[in-house]
Image 1: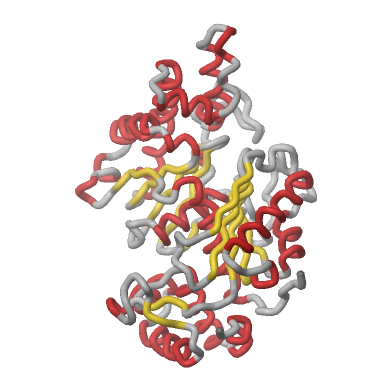
Image 2 (image 1 turned 90 degrees about the horizontal axis):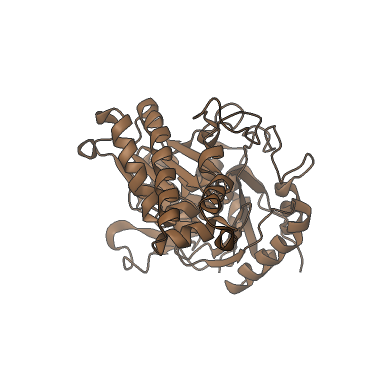
Length: 405
């Protein structure tokens, strides 16, 4: 097998040619594709991609994909390599880790999930996350020193210039918490970090069936609510990483105080806590205790419980009104709804009702190419997006730094 790190060392990131070669290699590692597809995703000319592909072929790093047959359809993937990419989603109630050997298809991933998340603080979660990463990597048949890239998704705002949390620091994160630094030291490879909704959008555009959509909005509706926006193959982050924070749009100026310090934010209406509270308030004391987690409400709604069905459907209608304003502003081609709430069809039903009622007809017309769909990647979307981010981050990073077991 050809050593990927050796190949990277041949093309330093200090020269344009080196950067372009790395871009092409990483694009193939992210997803087997045609040269046209690689040119579209990297924004390089087809001539540059063609030259780079010839060098990859001479280095023994590429081959026709198994799905297409050797060379059939022009799709090219990586030849067998030892290196592994890792994506980590540090959710409030769940940690999801995906690990994949770079020559495998995107859905051939080892997955590890912890149901506690970082709700009790990052320092308590860190040892568990490390264990999940090691277990997932070992399932791929490789070891920790074979990890080549690392991406991290967090449900918080990340400054795109510094990679640090953008204030305010919201529970359970505290000043001084630095998951990227901690996990980078553990694995010995550069760690990239971003908001989880941003990375959900990146995963859906990269691996979803509508990969050619120019403007994509991914909405994560779980413990909180956030949105990631992709325009022309680039994540729209904003100057301080605050783009897409629809969970903190004001929907009720006289509503409850939000943890961000605002009042009446969307999260105070359709976040996990208010939805659980609604279900419990409608119950007699003997049955209210059945609703402790958001997943309890979702499960009951799917089983036909009248109260929970109303709670989830109304949450979808509230979300749809906010998305209508977003669609009027940026006119996306595709809106994808993910997160725990999206597991219940009632959420999308309610969302469609108010989206089409309050948005400009031309902004949400299917005849114009618009679509509102459930996430195709499910609960792995954010971790898969983190995987993509980690590989993209290697473009300008040194290839050395593997750790010893």
